[in-house]
Image (cartoon, rainbow, N blue to C red; front, side):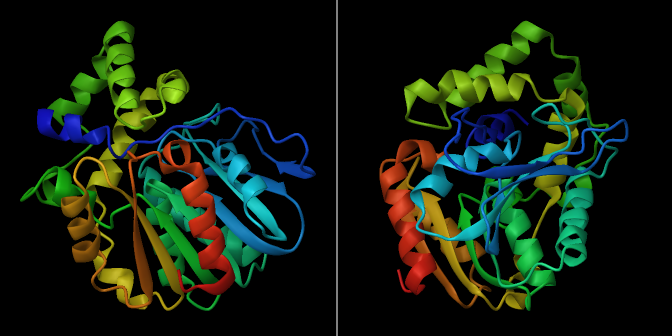
Length: 295
């Protein structure tokens, strides 16, 4: 499990706290007594574009991206239960969030959807596009593998992972100082942008501990390779070059082999948090893809 913990740092994400006060926005955040699987903030008008953050991350991480994309769409920024001040929900965590977002799309009759998802948000983008192929027009998957367990814990089955494991118990019982040290280590390995390390660390520390532990178990158990063939829309897959470009690219090519209509682009000189490490490259790549679908 120590190996899993070390590799974990490449897959968890956090959030920047930059504001976007110049954009007109409306907020639909139901922080009532009853916890909900997610909250949504909307910005602008037009056809829908869904922004799905990664593990521990608030949807507001995408505000700088919105400012740098040449799109006239209504942006939906999702934030998940247990993170960013949202109350935790019961397990299973990931599956509940996935089903609730799909129901949200149906209830609000969203069509011709573009989805941009980072890390776990990329997994959700795959799930949504595979279940609602007639509603989703394009997806951008950023630093997300359909089955990260295969890379992090080779030859470990999903059935062997469970919430009440000794490893999870250890994580839940870790004292504040130990957890802070671990969070700082993770943050420093998620970005080459040193100015963002404290921000990433704080978002991990502010997470509901049970959601953080059990939610990651959900992600380790996840294997979406068998649903990729259901996706018909154009897909851009963005992968970081760290720690080894050749190996990272091979992982993406192998795991997404069942996805037909795809383009894979590897980001130079970047760790997991691409939007922090190579923002100009990222914005241009996404703009090019969304406008012509060929790059």
